[in-house]
Image 1 (cartoon, rainbow, N blue to C red):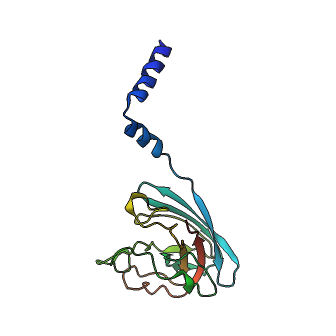
Image 2: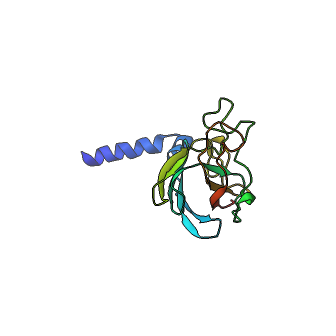
Image 3: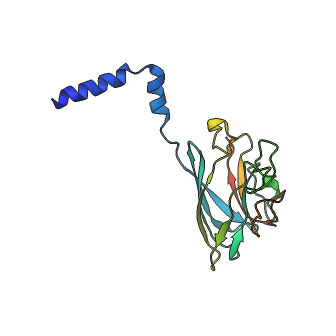
Amino acid sequence: MRSLALLAASSLILALPAAAQTAVVSQTPAAPMTVTFAGGDGSARGSATLTPGPNGVLIRLAVTGLTPGWHGIHLHKVGLCEGPGFTTAGSHVNSGAMQHGLMNAMGAEDGDLPNIHADATGAVVAEMLASKVSIAGEGGRPALRDADGSAIVIHAMPDDLTTPPIGGSGARVACSVIPKA
């Protein structure tokens, strides 16, 4: 009886149209990617693991060496983190004519993320979903791994989440390269 049930189930799978069989295979989640952060002086500051998903990119951070308190964090257009100011990372990822800030009525840019909080030792462990981007263009969202890569930049101050261009988040204090495709 058990053999008959297995035979029926396998026949059902084989009876699916080729497109449906492909859809089942393509739903396998992509592998996570881990990138490392550096401070303006080149010191190691931790890492981020980026996991692509159907609704964006899950970002898990483990960063040290920050000042205690809130910090702005954004996805930047260029995968280049030259210290000390990390200006080579360019501006925020923004595929449209959006304004800066998750709370801006005209926004938000694709690279806007919620603030992170460093504890009394300057350490951050956080998880967030970047729902407006993808790793390689999935879902029609901007790709972080494009021709010049991108970067995750942590700022010295909190982002007010409304004011262009960076919400008053101040200097760039840590940066991580997301490599190009």
